[in-house]
Length: 98
Length: 213
Image 1 (tube, each protein chain N blue to C red):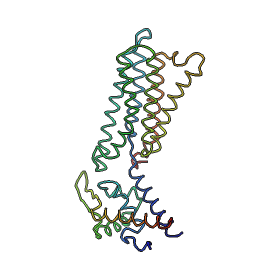
Image 2 (cartoon, rainbow over the protein chains, first blue to last red):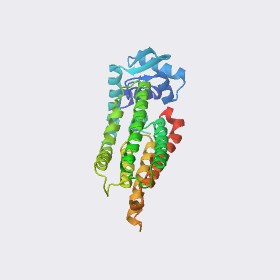
Image 3 (cartoon, rainbow over the protein chains, first blue to last red):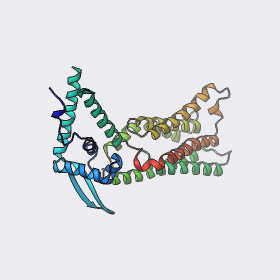
Image 4 (tube, chains in turn blue, yellow):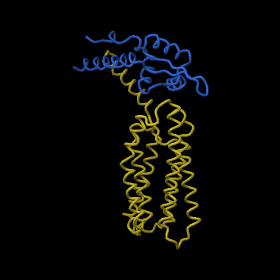
């Protein structure tokens, strides 16, 4: 029986799921763009990104452009975990319909 | 809410976020401003410098091709800058999708323009060419609707409806509306659509352009 307990707890949180979703759409996201898109506070966003980084799901790149810029991207492990997460959700939906 | 409904809700949220993040604006507000101003300037210049008795065929074509090249160049610059700001390749998947969507109607417009250029004869006169441009441009913008912001779709409808309104006027007008349109009035149609509509689009989208809505 598939249920929400099978879902990856690192991803299965509203804020982190939103971050993972956005990171899956582009090669990388600047911190400010993520913040603007998700309308999160700096502290909240940093906390979630740190959790995802510690889980090995997100890579951090610091670059010096006009000003210091921190960018985030999904690691292979993160992309794979996100796809697995989606797969479990789809299986829950299918199981409910059958 | 049971587990299935919760899972569906999660998937909907993910889809909504992904769609929002992948929206692609093929025409930026600054490009629309440049295109609108160029179109209005070209209309004024052409009307002021083309005597009524002269053959307007090539001057009409040259002026509007110049406007197209300058506007397309401006758009390219802004698309490249936007791609750099997003830290994405210039030829991103979104840009490729936009090109694919725009290509068929733009190809139609290009071929009819070429025929107009090589044969200065009716029925392919300035009026029909300008209506064709408006319709093809509108169809092109509407073809990007599944990943374009709503404002761009509305702009597409504006061009399509204006072009079709001109065509319908031909059918139902007792005095053949398009036949009455000389090159001078056709330029006014171009100023109204490619000039005014682009300026309206620029004004409406400029404050929100930074957030990508």
